[in-house]
Every structure is written in structure tokens, then in C-alpha cells.
Length: 508
Image (cartoon, rainbow, N blue to C red):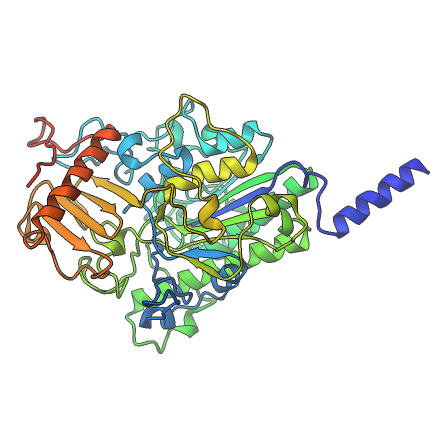
């Protein structure tokens, strides 16, 4: 009789959507989308003067109904910043530190040090190591099953960071040192044996020779490992880092017809199919969480790892991130502004975790935040403090996630890129409230032949007018903040010549 009562209680709990571990820890899913900027979606993030979402032509071009679905369940940020290239952002999520501190300040070339001719020789090209404090390792210690699916890019090919299992993940599918896939096509074995074999996506041999697009294969794997964790009654952390929408811009045939009459060039049409395929993946995971009874207990974060790389227009123009200026790798906002959505996969007023971290539905948060803030936010949700000797630059998002402003947090963002060549070379930008200053270590045409660019983003959100000459007091104040922030983070600087001395920013 006792066994029957226990069985009936368990069945009742599961039927209500509550796995047996629901009282101990929430599940956490991070969707990290490669090279997806804030305008690469049908969901508007930018707002009008009254704070209402405002659609622009690019929002009308893309199709992301599942991003819209997720945002309707939670909160989206219209002023969320990432590092301007991928490996720095990924390392910031894993460590809670700004790139200027963890020194992974460039994308990691798997096979050679790509600091650039005047880049800092000591930058962290090798990436994360086995002994480093990582979000995955801390959640693993808390009893989570930690699942990595998709792009890693945490370290060079021969380093510890090439294998996510060395960094605290119990499971890794597709993770390696590569920054882009050899191919998105199963018929091409995702690059294995082809012209881009060095970038072949690992762990997917079962899909080789099939019509399974890479985005779909990774989604099937993610759902399978989530189901296994639920069956084992383990809370899970799914870090789902799609290779989409990174180049090569290979069209996802499932969605190609939607863009053939768009008037956009073929690479841009293919980019749009990658976005729609990524969005379908989000919907498939949400559906799966509901089907296995885990949705109410699962906290979702969705974001891009840097600004858009859409193949539309010049890297410093108002083009692929229009109306924002610039794109991935550039010093303008189009290189650093990314979509960010947070939501519980399914609302439940009675869920204890949702009561502890309430997220209102359909809300827009305008206060600035950044990628390093995920680390302390996720750890707090899981009830796992970071080690005392580990410096955390990120600040918990709890108040912002509730839809309120957080007067205790500053609205500053430091982006340090002491490297070349890229869309913008050897630069640091610093935001403080409405003001943004950019310091160029080697002035060029891209910097208007000056060390300094200054913008007021409240008056000029699209960075059309450089105020450096007109506002000397503001320029001086912002440069003082930039220099102090670099020193606070123990940043590494470009050198004045190969093998030369560090070149630090100078006050005007």
C-alpha cells in the first residue's frame, strides 16, 4: 500500500510538470547565437522615445516567431552589450569577467597566435584551462548535469579549452577549437573530409550523409541530453551555442523560399535562412521542455555573442545593423549590441524558483547590462556562490529581470580590442550612461584620423556625429573613465612596435 501511494504521488508530480528535483534547483538553458546582432530578428529590441518597441526594415525582413514567443513570456533588453568578437564573449560568460581582465581579447585562431603585429604578446591566445574557474564547473559541483552543445571556441586546438569537457561540462557535442563550421550540410559531413576539414564539426557522425542541417542536428542532440538529465532526476545546465548564424553563409533549404524574392543578394538570403533555422531550434527546445514536464522549472537566457555579421554593406556603415552603425568587430554599437531575452520556459505562479526570481511577461528593460552579468546571475539562481578568490566583474541581473531599474549598478561597459586586423583595429571603447568614447591607438581613416571619437547615445543613438572636438570637457571625463577602467581590469595594451613597449591611452 505504501509503495502504491508513493507511486501515485510521483505520477501526480510528473503530470503537473514537476520532476522530482524541482524543489532543489532550477534548470538553466543559455541559447548563445553566433554573430547575431540586435537587428537580426523580427522581434524589435530598439524603442521609440516613449519606450515602446519600434520596428525597422530589417525587423520586417527576418522571421523569428520563436524569439517573439520567448519574449512574450519574459523580458527583453534593448541595451545589452557583448564583446565585439566571439571568444572574448564566450570566456566572459564562463568566468564572469570582462575581456580586459581575462585577456582573451580577440577571437582565437585555432592554430596560430593572432594577436596582430602590434597586439599584446601576453594575451590569452591559449584560452581557458582545466584549472580555471568556470560557470560550468561550479554548476557541476552543485550537482547539475552540465551539457555543452554547439560551438566552443574557448581555446586553441592543442589547448585544454579545445575540449569543453576539460572546463566542467559532463557532455559535449560539437564543441572544439573552431570558430565556424566546415559546412552546415549533413551531405558534406559538416566539413569532415572536405576543403574545410580543419573546421569540421565533431561528434555528429550519425548524421553524416543525410539531409540533416547542422542547426537541426545540434537541436536533436540537445533535446536528447536534456531528456536524459530529466530521466535521471538531475537539474541540468544546457549551454546551447549554435554555429548559426556564423559564416559560411550556406542556405538552410527548409527556409530558402521565404527570401528568394526579398531583393537581397544570395549571401544575405542565406544568412536569413540561418536565422530562421536558429529560431526554429529555439521553438523545438521550448516544445520539448513542455513535453517532458520540465518547462516550469527551466530558466532561459537567449543572446548573441557579438554584433551582426550580416553580409549587407560596409563594416562601418549603417547597413547590416541599421539603424545602428557598424557590425561585428567594429567600434560602433552595431558591433556590440546584441539581443537578450530572459524568461521561464513556462510561467507558474506556484513554482518556488519563479517566486524567488520573478520575470514579468512581455516587458522591455532599457537599463544597460552586459554578457559578464550572466555568470553571477546564473550562479545565484542555482544557489552556488563563486569562489572568494575569483574576481567577478559581472553584476547580478535579478532586479533588472523583474522589470525594474537597479540604481545600485552603474551603466558602464568597457570593450577592449588591442588587436588587428579586423573591422576596426587597436581600439578601446567605454560607455558611461549616455556617453561613449572610443580611443584608437593608431589613428586612421576609420577613426577620422584622430585618437578620439565621442558620442552621446541619448541624442545620437546611431553614432552619426563625433563630438570629441565640440565637447572637450566630456571627452576628458570619459577618457579618464576609460583609462581607470583599463587599469582596474589589469588590461594588456598594444605595443608601439613589434616587440616594443606597451602603448597606453593618453588624455586629450
